[in-house]
Length: 156
Ligand code: INI
Image (tube, rainbow, N blue to C red):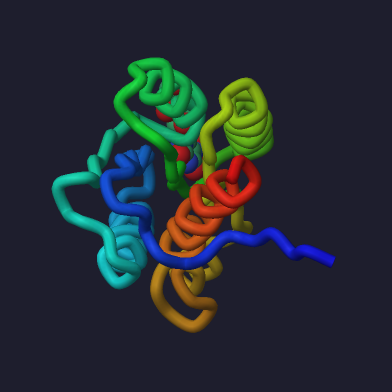
């Protein structure tokens, strides 16, 4: 049986965009930092990585769609944080962001990672942004790297 899977090494020359939501930036800045760290520690060049900021999680799908439509990027890492405790429209924002990112991801042939925290409390968000539950931005970037390599292996 031939097993096809993606390596965890950034391919030379591949351009990646992080799309970061500014809302809850105390958290999302940490996710961006984690994603950048994962990228650099797996062989990425700083000049091939861009950060595109959108106002909130609701705008993540639009950011992802525009960035990929520009033709300048090979993959996207979407990062944001929706926290139930601080908003009554948690359900709307998180559902639309999730659905929108999935829709764009399926429409394009490019890897899109889903790094959106959806938590009940700010403490849970902090745990996932570089403290006891790791850093979901780092994890999302690892997914981008693996999927880029997987696509190449599938097409080889
Ligand atoms: N955006 C977030 O990214 N996280 C949130 O928790 C959040 N809350 O709490 O409402 C949030 N709202 C803003 C939303 O994403 C849009 O930017 C806004 O509605 C304008 O379209």
